[in-house]
Image 1 (tube, rainbow, N blue to C red):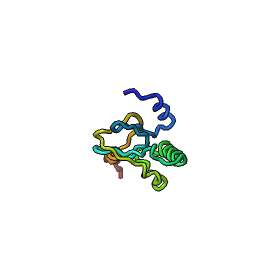
Image 2 (image 1 turned 120 degrees about the vertical axis):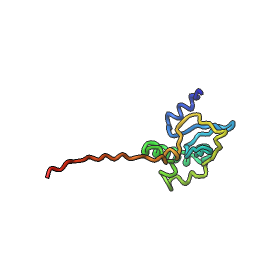
Image 3 (image 1 turned 90 degrees about the vertical axis):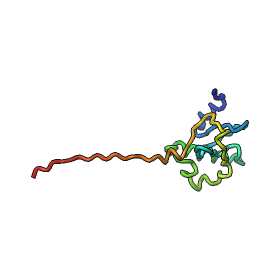
Image 4 (image 1 turned 90 degrees about the horizontal axis):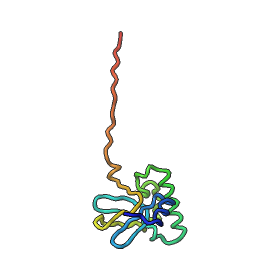
Length: 126
């Protein structure tokens, strides 16, 4: 799929944004989570004022550049991101397609890591 030029410019300026397609509608926002059945995204176009939009982008930038990007923005920023909760939309994955941008899945975070232990035997000469 070819990504339109205006989306490339948008993602260059704001690499944390994801562009998705659901049905005949396109949405731009920050992915919260994607699992087997449902995808959740904070939709930028649903924000009410220019001040909210600027704050949304500022917090998105902080989350993107200051974390490992594996934990959703609402968990990392907590109460600071609560005012944007109303812009969260959930989509069935049956008619949901990611056009461009990063995705996030909590199931990837939950994979158990095995720690390797090394044991070194030392001979005592008493």
